Image 1 (cartoon, rainbow, N blue to C red):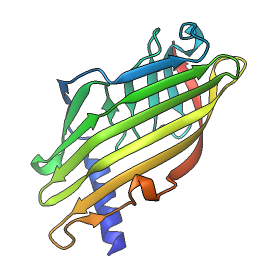
Image 2 (image 1 turned 180 degrees about the vertical axis):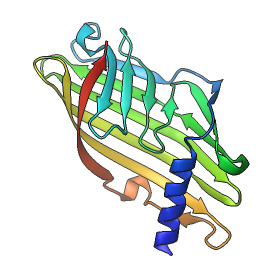
Image 3 (image 1 turned 45 degrees about the vertical axis):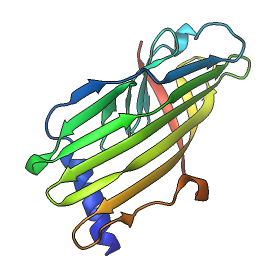
Length: 191
C-alpha cells in the first residue's frame, strides 16, 4: 500500500513537467528584513540554485524573491500568483503561495528564507495530491558571496485521495512534526 502511494506521488511529480504554466495574480506576500536596516546586499541579487537542483531562488535588488523553483516537481512559482500547470490526462496542478520571508544579518552573513505554499493540488484522473508546506532555509553566505551553506527544514502536510485510499495522510501536521531536514549548498548561478 505504501509503495502504491509513493508511486502515485512520483507519478504526479513526473507528469507535472508536461504543459505550460498559467498564472493568476494575487496580493504580494514577500516580507524582507535586513537586521541592521541597510539595504539588501548587491552580491546576493541574482539566481541561487541548490546543489541537488531541486530548489532555486531569484533575489531582486530590494531583497524580494521574484520566483522560486520548489522541490515538488521542480515547479517555478512567483510570489503573489497562483500557478496552474497542465498535467497528463487532462489533470491540473495548482500552487497558491502564502507569505514568504527573506531575512539577512550582515554581521553574521546569515540569510534566512521562508517559503510557504498555502495550498497545492495536483489532480490526474481520479487521483489527487493536495495540501500545504512550509520550507525554511537558514545558512551563512561565504566570504566570496557566491556560496550559501543552508540547513533546510521542510514541513509538508499532504493528503492523497484515490478510490482505494481516500484521505490518506502522507505527512504529520506541522505542529506535531520536527520536519524533514537536509543540508544544501546553494551557488549563485546568475547575476
